[in-house]
Length: 328
Image (cartoon, rainbow, N blue to C red; front, side, top):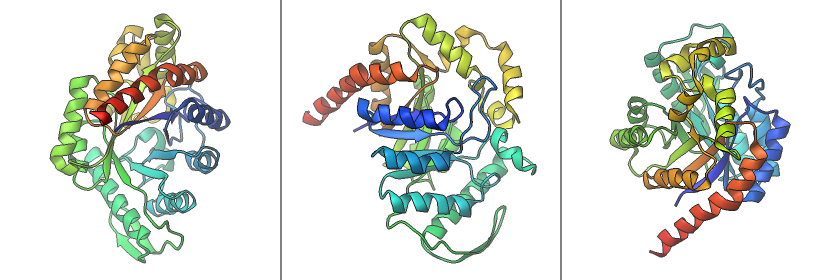
C-alpha cells in the first residue's frame, strides 16, 4: 500500500533548513523523503541550490527513513561518479536509498559548456548511463566508449544490495520507453486523465508490476488566497511543457517566460487548496492509480504549517484508508 513522503526542494531552501524540515516531517508521520538535485534554481526568487549528495549523507544519518534523489548523469555528472555516490549511501544505509535518473534540463547540465543534445540523444545517453552504473555496482572493471566514455573503472566500495534505478518521466512517451529498462517509474502530478496516460504507458512499455513513485506539487495554506499566492510566487516558472523546461539555460530565462503566467493558470499544474479533505481526495486518486510511494512537495514557503497539518489531519486519514483496504 502507498507510503507518503516529504519532498525537500533544494531550489527553495537552504540545506540546513531542509534538514530541519525532514526531521520535522519524520516526527509528524511522513514515511519517506525525496529531494531534487539542481545546480540552479528554477527562478531567481527561489534563490537556493545546495548540493544534494552532501545533504543526503547528513539527512539519512539524522532521519531514519528511506530517501531518494532524481539526478541526470551524462553531462554535469559522469555516471561512474553517480554509481560511486549511490553505492556509498547504499553501503552506509542498507535498503534505504533509491536513485532516479532523468535526461535532465539545460538549466543544470549546460554549466559544463558542452553541446546540449536533443531529446533523442539524451535518452540514448541516459540508458547508457544506467547500464554503466549497474555494471559498476557488480564490481566489474568497465571500459566503455559510447556517448559516455569509461576507462578501466572499478567500484571497490559497493552495497550488498544495489539501490533501485528509477526512471524519471513526465510524458507518456518517455514513461513507455523507460518501462523496459528502469526498475520503476517516478513522475509528477498531472490532472487525473493525463497522469493515467503516463501510468498506462509505463505499464505498456514493460513496467507492469514495477514500483511507481509520484511527486505531487501542491500548495496548502490557511486560506485559498494565500495558497494561490504562494504557488504563483514560487512555482510559476515550473509549469511549462517539457520542451521548454529542458531547453532554457538559466533562472533569468525562466523568470522572463513566466511573466506571461497568470495566478489562475496555476490551478492546472499545482493542487491548490486550503481544504484538507480536498487534498485527501486527490491523494486517494493517486493511490488508486497504483502509486506505491507519493512524495508531497508543498511549493509555497510555509513548510512548517504544511507538515503539521498534513501530519495531524491528512496522513492519518490516508493511513486509515490503507488499514481498511488491508482488512478488506
